[in-house]
Amino acid sequence: MLPILQADLLKVKRKWFWLLVFLGPFGVIGLQVVNYGVRYEWITSRTDDQWATLIQSVNMFVAPALLLGMAILASQIASIEHKETAWKQLLALPVKRRDVYISKFIITSGMIFISALLLCIGTVVLGIGLGFGWNFSVSDILKNSFYPFFAALPVLALQLWMSIVQKNQAGPLAIGIFGAVFSTYAHLAPNWLIWKWPLLYPGKDPLPYVGLGVLVGAVILLAGVMDFRRRDVA
Amino acid sequence: MTETIIQTDGLVKSFKGTNVVDRVDLTIRKGEIYGFLGPNGAGKTTTIRMLLGLMKPSAGTISIFGKSLTSSKIEILRKVGSLVESPSYYDHLNGRENLEALRKVLQVPKSRIDEVLAIVRLTKDAHRPVKEYSLGMKQRLGIASSLLGEPELLILDEPTNGLDPSGIQEIRELIKSLPEECGITIMISSHLLSEIEQMATQVGIISKGRLIYQDSIEKLQSKAQHRIRLRVGNGEIAKKKLLPHGHVAEAEEEYIYVEVHHDDEIASVVSTLVKEKIPVYRIEEQRQSLEDIFLDLTKDEEGSYASHSAS
Image 1 (cartoon, rainbow over the protein chains, first blue to last red):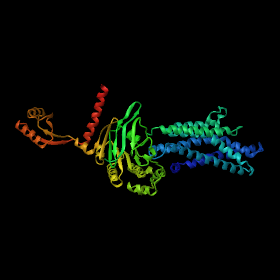
Image 2: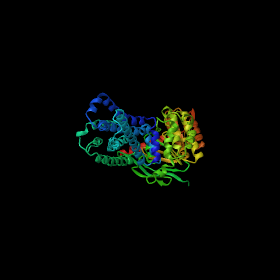
Image 3: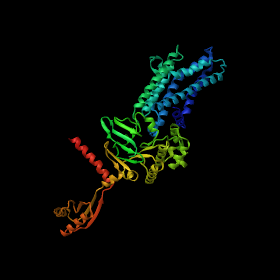
Image 4: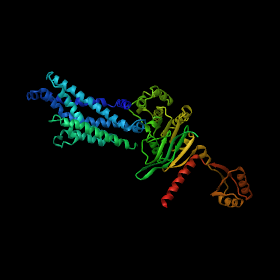
């Protein structure tokens, strides 16, 4: 497993993956810079807890950015192998197909994890920059990044499967982008829709969706592995 | 009897009801260069994909190094190097990085990269991105990749496809040198017999999914017919005159064709023609090339298929 991961890390070189990992959280924080820049007085006058308001404002854009990033990264990492038909070379090596597939999942989810971490750092830097002081709740900021991350894992597993099993990335990307846009309007959608899950924090009780996200994510991942194993490689 | 490296039994692959590969029994022994021949679309690549575990056979078994491919796939693939159809590579990486990505998986020493680069003479271009490579260089990189894991069996599917004559020559020399230098077995597919003829020790010919010939290259060559063509002015008359003397000929306009197995026979044919006052303008030997045999073999197969479907 480890050698395959190392090979995958080498293959993402010069493919702008790391720029994307940085761009996601940078965009989300950037929007808040604009938001506060335009109406600082108004926002700060309406609340006593400046940090809580900041976290909530940041939260608005976390889900769509997360879902969009997942769709793009999954498509990109699959494209590396689709382009110039590298699958046949990779899978004729002494490797288990399961490991090849899971490695792609680990790489993409790891990158999104780093994005989530960058978002935490960005939130703190922004809050301090706006003069809200050092008295913030670390756990709230972590939850704001990582609850949506875990709740969105089923979407990542689904995007990865769609991107890997077909060469043409138009379908998976269209579905991914639609899901990201849809998530911003998903408040009224039924709770079983996986695209709604990263949105449920800061609802009343986000934890079921975090647990469900990890569980359903794992189920979709395993289903993807099973499907990938029985496929013929053209 | 030398060790059998690849053995397939009744190998079948069907897509949507048609058998693209139909009951193929391959036998490839250690140290051979096995030429796997067939027209485009005959099932060569599909067979090779099954041998590499990229596709699952619809029926039949594959054993490589005496082990079943289904139960010992990883163990077998560790000793197999392959190049399937168009070259596979990561075009945003340079030549060395491409090999490094494979080396990490194969877990061979780093020095092996320099060795294979030297074998295919890409050492100087190893730092360049592969997207700048010519087709010949990409193909050589593909061969380097296939050699990276120090394989005992090399499976090359159309390795000279799309190369210019000098590139073909270069790859041919390289492939020929491998069994001598490293003692490896090679299976190489092509749709050009002339290509295989110069490298292979054994040949298998596949047409419409069926393996229609499998033996040594010498046996195939001995199948070549020797015919003598004589220009005699009027073929039909010459044919009639020859028959009472026990010579069977085929006539075609001003030519006749005779099949002879001995020099005396042709001498007798000529003396008969002279005695019958038929002018002989020219006598020439027509040797069927391997290419013709190949075409004949594959054509026969098509004919028998047509009659099958008609009945």
